[in-house]
Length: 354
Image (tube, rainbow, N blue to C red; front, side, top):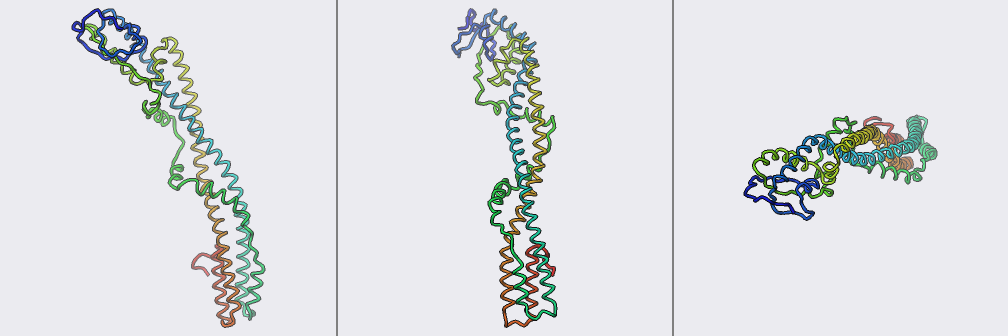
């Protein structure tokens, strides 16, 4: 219990004060929680004044130590998250490299097939328009005999993996966000560190900060009110997890710890900055690669799907060639239309070209 040798009437000036183990010792407070209002003796007030005067001289250094502890904790959290993102981007970079090689191989095969088909279709069209051809059935049969499509069914497992990995990886707006990311500078990094409030940083670790109400004589009230105000203001800024370190560490020891903490914070920030830089570079790189992969996947899927339309057109070629009801001139004209459509299907002709 506090010793009270004076009546509250003699100490009519009221101040609210955060407690600490040293404050409790100075005021001879018991370990039991105190909820009453305390009237200080002159001896207690003098001891409190001496403690707070020393604390006031140390306040700047203790405040800096608190800020370094806070900054280091925030950077540690950012470092952990950034490592996760960078490791994921590295994996994507590696996977995308494999995907590019695989898809290029398949694209090259399909391009060669398309070029071969184009030559066959154009040669057929040239022969078809020759006056020497009186019966087109053999001409159509020879064309279709020469055409053997590449079996792409065996590709489906690999293509499905990359479709899932890259086509379904992100929505377009998320890609746009990735594209807009840039390498951060140190100023932006420091700003981000201090934007987060203490409550957001460690709400679950915030310890209770005990307050007591003390009554002082006018003399000590005038001497202590500014000191207590500065002291209380610092306490309100410090998360509970740091209170003991900031308040109770001996001052000479704390100055050494401050330098150590500054170096630790600097090293963590340096590592974080390097990873953020790598994250920015990898983000832009993987964005461009992923866009290439998506384009190739869509082109390959389109080429495979076009085979179905080509086969339908082949049936039309056969049926038209065998139709005895159509005059040869009209039959040739119809076959030219079908071949032109086939050239468009494989991308050899654009709409409107013939």
